[in-house]
Amino acid sequence: MGPIGSSKNLMLSNKYIFICLILAFFSLSFKNDKESYLTIPTGFPAPIIPMDNSLSEDRIKLGKKLFFDKILSRDSSISCASCHQPKYAFSDGLKTPKGIKEREVLRNTPTLTNIGYNQSFLRDGVNPSLEAQVLVPIHEKNEFDFHILLVVERLKKRPDYNNLFQKAYNSIPTPNFVTKAIACYERTLISGNSRFDQYYYQNSTSSLSKAELRGMDLFFNKLNCIQCHSGFNFSNGEVVNNGLYTEYKDIGKMRVSLSEKDNGCFKVPTLRNIEITGPYMHDGSINTLEEVIDHYSKGANANKNRHELIKPFDITKREKNDLVSFLKSLTDSSFIEDYL
Image (cartoon, rainbow, N blue to C red; front, side, top):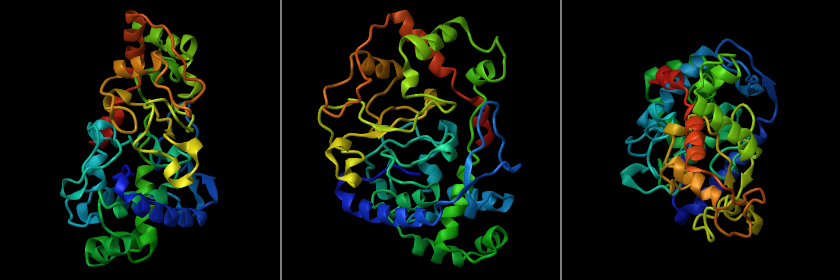
């Protein structure tokens, strides 16, 4: 849910990622859940829901309350929503966020747009389940700097939470049900009604301007952006090196895999709501969409792990403007408004 903390805490991060992997092991069975609690946009598949955490109104209600409650952090100063703000499509508009006591966080806050469709989690894709991922920001020193067992002790002292957990899971608050409830809420964060969706999936031919249509043609054809930003969610979900740096301070997936081939490798992000989820890249180092295009048009920076598909390309000023216009057509205003 939250980005990873400072590099000084990698050993701590690895410890809790191991815990997350163990938890994920017990949630490997999945089902397609087409219950009325989710509104599936036209052209979208049904998300895959763990069989041991089916959705219900009570579970979603509990998860939402936990998501917005600062009780999850050590000093009760920040919540999940402090970094994942609805008005920014559940990102925060910052280069990198701050945890408790204004502690610097290493990575840019990713959007939670359509997070229930993801197959892996965190910027480097090392966490395999949405439920287990909830533990990471709680335990990270530079984020919530707390522990799930201590969170549960707080919740047990609250009559409102005891009542909600009883309704949702027929149980007192437990670490397992805290993570499951938040994951249930996050699976409702589905975005699929942008002007692009209205044009492409809903057959509204007037939804896109001529400039946006030209940009769409560039995206799908000449520039072939869909090699990485593919499918209904505009991401193939792969973990790759995009040549952002010749040498990476943040080694990406390598911090867990310990494999040099994963040095500087991060997940291909969704482009949905990209207009309002900047700054961009894993560290928020690029401010505008125009600058992102410049990065790729020059072929990125030299790096032995840089993905082979990243090569220089020519693009005119008009084409760049058209491409940016198309990317902005992926903004789903109704998604933002629904969660404000």
